[in-house]
Image 1 (tube, rainbow, N blue to C red):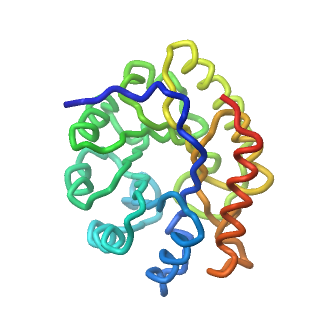
Image 2: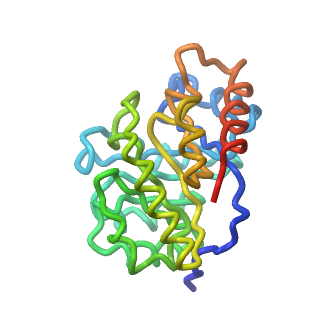
Length: 238
């Protein structure tokens, strides 16, 4: 049975480590180090090579990731018609599925399908996408993922126009009595986390800017995650 989106504002700050940015030649060791360092979840990008030009992860790889950790798996599905993938991802034991509104004809149906599988349901929005695309299904949304860069590639420049978009969305959520979790993906680091947290973000995807930087290694993951969390907690507003 479909459960309606959470209205409580006690979500808490979360740092989700983006596995796409990790060292894939030693992914098992990377995951153990990130888990020990305090990551709250693993962000798993799935790309179909059509919605975005890149390809990333298949179901077998997600199965292996699930077996390697007890942390929540936060799936970011960059694919057209995401409903095709939902049953198989639920079998893999993921905890959250976030799909792109731009690649889905019926977000309402996809959200209900995710929630019927007992999984947290989220929608990702590119900077250019109008928020009105979600206004008919806000009661089903557990999470909104705001893209601060274009989806599909690492190491891009931050899009500051995401900030007024988030501000308007949070205002609408407050007016309607909803409080989904708000995550941000793309150039999330020391310079941008304070700005994003001030607009209501509570989930921060750690990629090449904040976590997997050029100097990153398992010995300093703990410090990097702590730095991200401290910045977010200091600046968080709702």
